[in-house]
Image (cartoon, rainbow, N blue to C red; front, side, top):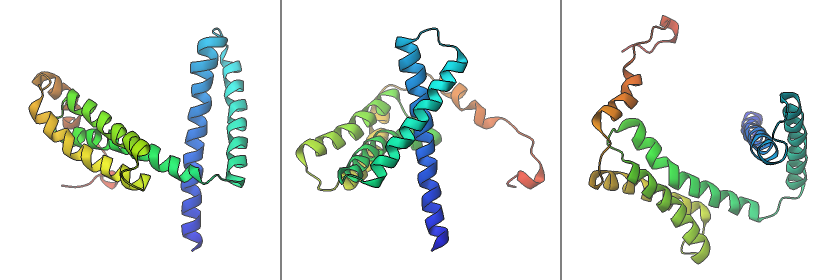
Length: 178
């Protein structure tokens, strides 16, 4: 039981860590430096990031002490939209050279569109189930749209995938023998 609790806590802390680091650096570099203090020195950027880290962690603790019920629903909606938009293009793009740009955009629109439509009209009672429907629809939409839309030029596709053909020397200990 203790191992499971430690695993859940480590996953939660890892997620919080990456969100807080990303949020503080994005806010510092893209908003504060981008719009307000354009010639900010690196030392001041680091100070801003660290200050925002503390603020975001404090805010997270305050929310965690008295979590609103809608947080789980918001997570279900956001993860459903993200998974519905990105899962199919990512998976097919890794293993199939036939994925087209149009299929990726249709998958994005389908995943986010289904999730938002369900949010507005409530066809599927659970946002988690709506996310699952969005993921499955993306897995069906990407190959269909890829088959009927113009393909990328073959030499460009080969250039993209040529890194997979590169031979790499590794020690026997780290290799997976064929």
